Length: 179
Ligand code: AMP
Image (cartoon, rainbow, N blue to C red):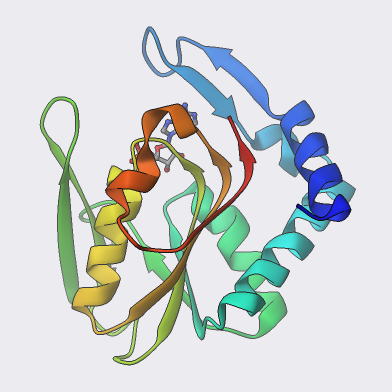
């Protein structure tokens, strides 16, 4: 790990707020809103993510609703890349494609506009946090169904004890802070 990444990871880990029992008992929620309130740190984090995305060779940034947008949008704008939105069901107005994934109880799904990713695009999919990997796995499946190649799954935080990387198979993964 480079010194710059190391220092950034330490600073981000220090400022992320742990909220016990949110949104339900037993969950330790990693609150990233504290990063956004520290302008210089948020800026350094976006700089880091831009480097990672550039190195991946991505031609499209895809952000997962909603915290993925906080990182995907500034990166896409800075690099001059398209930003494709991955949303919860029923939110997108145009023709959509859906991918479902299993939760502990039941299923959930994500949607994209059919024309959000052009066939042959190299796509980086961004979210704030990797937990079990269900959300990112479904998002990557959706991108591939639209003809895109997923070159990277990018996260600020990874909860490695939940084994999310396993669910992502051989998709390359980058996470700045790993717990
Ligand atoms: P998963 O599909 O289990 O990998 O969950 C990832 C999604 O749920 C991400 O969009 C996260 O924002 C959110 N998430 C899951 N667990 C947590 C947690 N402990 N703290 C904050 N966000 C979480």
